[in-house]
Amino acid sequence: MGERGVVLRDRRSPSSLGRRRRKTFEQSLDVLRALGLPSWVVKCYLRAARDAERLPHEILCSMAEYVACTMLGASPEEDGPETVPPRLAGPAEPASPAAASKRSRLH
Image (cartoon, rainbow, N blue to C red; front, side):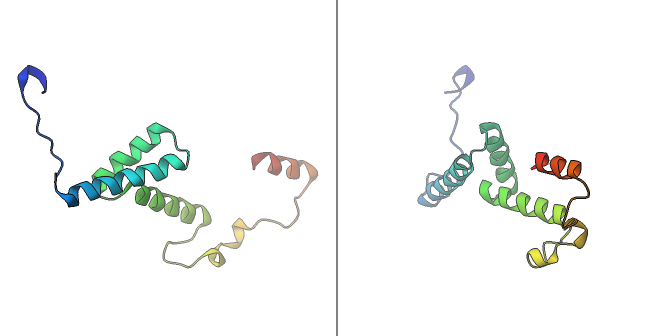
């Protein structure tokens, strides 16, 4: 019962299809938890998935793919790592020992 004695109706579907979809959604959230994401991040993906009417792990995969393509300068339609532009490859040897130590600290 809610405030002032009003009975709150459960909006979820009691059908077997509704139960199966809720189970699949919860399993998708379990995937995010298994990846070690903080609970607040899992909640953000939960909300985004409900808004988009998709599963939370699908939202995460889409975002990861977008970020990877953006960082590599590739478009999602192109195939794999051979499309990495040469500007991201960098020099084979660091310019100086200071640059080498700086680079190793960033990774």
